[in-house]
Amino acid sequence: MDQIDAALIHAQYFSRKDIEACLAFDIGTFDAQANAALIRELFDTFRETYQPEIED
Image (cartoon, rainbow, N blue to C red; front, side, top):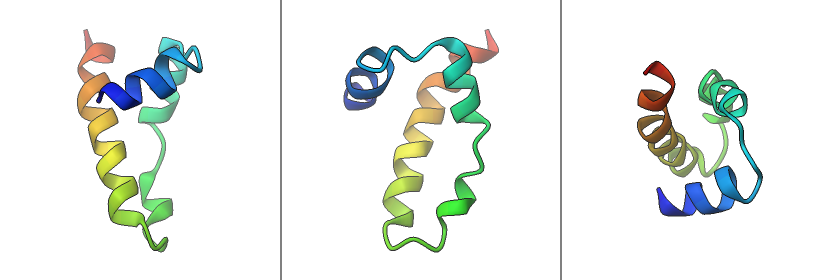
């Protein structure tokens, strides 16, 4: 979570709209990739961290 926050949200100046767009992304498009499990794990962490923030 800290790495996502530092490298993506703060360093890239992600707005609420940017986060919403990422949360809407179909992560299934990466299922055929060699690192699909790691990509999904990172995306799930992102979702768990920022989804509640959006729903408030």
